[in-house]
Image (cartoon, rainbow, N blue to C red; front, top):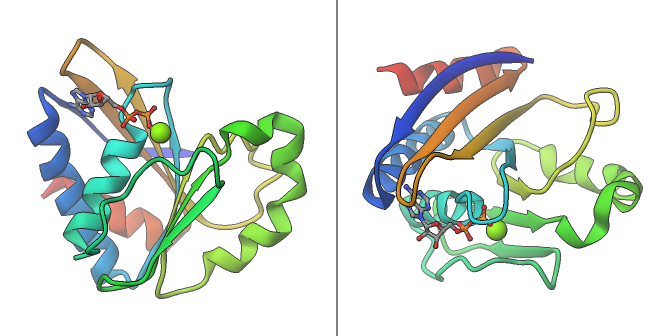
Length: 158
Ligand SMILES: Nc1ncnc2c1ncn2[C@@H]1O[C@H](COP(=O)(O)OP(=O)(O)O)[C@@H](O)[C@H]1O
Ligand SMILES: [Mg+2]
């Protein structure tokens, strides 16, 4: 998968600015399917929450750890937020067919702990890898599969 854009943010405000920009590109793109990677506390939920906020979702996005999916319909487009942590590797494979439903245009799907291999996940997507640098600093690497997604992520450069 092609790495398109990398940046390091220095605090939570900068994470919000990055998510705001990303959200506006998602809106222009009429949705996206996004997998988020990173250790516990990296900021997957924080980034998801800021994306939803800047798509004008009224509710506060919380971690869906115990329900697998939360959905929000009060914003510019429907936001589906998955946390697959509890499913572990084997379980994740069992929901790939169901996930395909969430790849449609016009929705933003955000997935935490999507430990899929490339062969397992047969659709275009964006992958965001978040790395812990220090207490408040995080690295963000954006990858994309598919022309539309590449263009979307390219938009982060300017
Ligand atoms: N620059 C930053 N970006 C994201 N989170 C940050 C940042 N600096 C500090 N944090 C803190 O790190 C934690 C990230 O938690 P969370 O988003 O729940 O992580 P994850 O979903 O990856 O487990 C939060 O407590 C958040 O306030
Ligand atoms: Mg989380």
